[in-house]
Image (cartoon, rainbow, N blue to C red; front, side, top):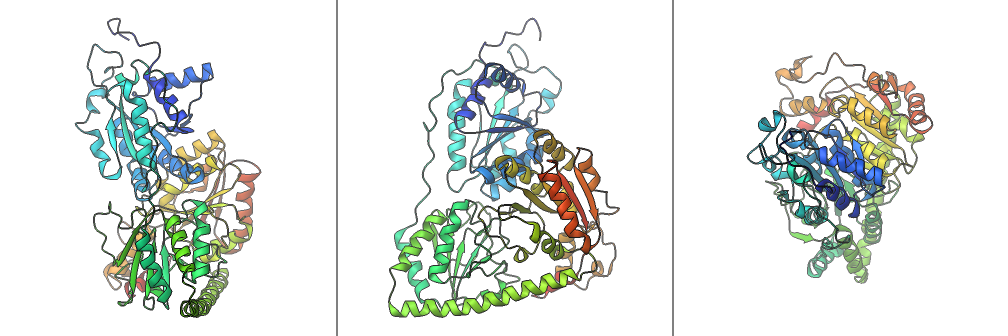
Length: 584
């Protein structure tokens, strides 16, 4: 420090920042530090020395991993999370995870340093050459489309109010991330002093559904012969699953999950009709779209033109999506569990003989559809056992006998969920509809951090595993003691890209090519070696018959040896599904 620079205050604003976060229930601060962090690091050191309560600092050497861990930690705990990154460049690295959080309505407070404002004469001002090149005219503009609120701290006296506003907005339905930038001079300034008690600036209660809209939906449902419920994000709060289970059973409404992100019904529930609404849309006369941004793909699925469509959720129209034009005869804005509870009560009041007879007819028809789905699952498992090399179905079938009901299963690659007898809320997690790759590995560690007594197993493709920044991720797992099992479905290519190309050009030149451009990921690295560099267990699997023993060894590594594990499973790829998609 130059002898001409002013001295720092005895109590610094960094102390206030950490104290405010802790008093508001933020238990961890996931961070990748830079030259804007000195006051935060000093505040952590003082808290450790003095025994003050602050969030646990979690060093994460890549911002995408930090965002994924925060995402998973929220899913495990239901509490908002905080991530701090280095000015604009750290924000840029966090953007993929931020977009995932935005589209999945995950409340994360993303804190970012801001290049020092002053060039000389103030403590905390510019002191290294990057402080000029990293300044932006509008750093918040990088993230503004994907956050609910952004602000640059103006003075240390604002810290508590800014944290309260950020967390209140992030946790207000529909939930989502927020962004707060912190100039270095302000964090190094004087402490703001005593904090108000937690809850001083509370978030509003979730919205309640309109009684008139509920009554209209109940009238339509009482008369429907073939209703269908489609969801994607219902079940984020595990306690909500019971409401859907009760509603579906009482009203005889079959439920499907289209690209589901969460567990929404027990596999064995008689109203569970699987994960593909397409076969049921042509006959459905009432479609309930529950917490679902994309209930069907118009190009692939044909909806009964006579059907009524009801959208239900805190934001049933997904107003932050630039274009979304699915049919909507009725939109019910309200917390989804509360809406289902209200709809269940409204249906219970309709006990006339005609309505009851309709419900019983539905129940019988659904039982037949459910039996057909069960038969398809059995056939899929039998075929997978005879596959020449592992595929997604063979992997799921081999894992199922070793899976525990309370295991936390994450999928960032398509696996046949019908082969998993999922029974407990909070046991399945799929990636965000934004599709920002690399989420699964960090999210599994975040889930493990929030629920240390449960096993976390992430299924990923080889491409998504590379996006997950496995070296820093496995470093964090080893440093914090967060053993998770990662299963890589390694087809040595961008399978989604290949399928998309063939869906548009099934008979084109790319379909005839063995090595279409921008598609193949060869020569494939020995992914199982990466985890070994951090003391983990890694294994390569090439045969279907070797899968059960490999799963047993991987689960033993994370549960008994307490170290992360990776199974690099070489899988087959078939163009059949891609061509079929183009002809639906």
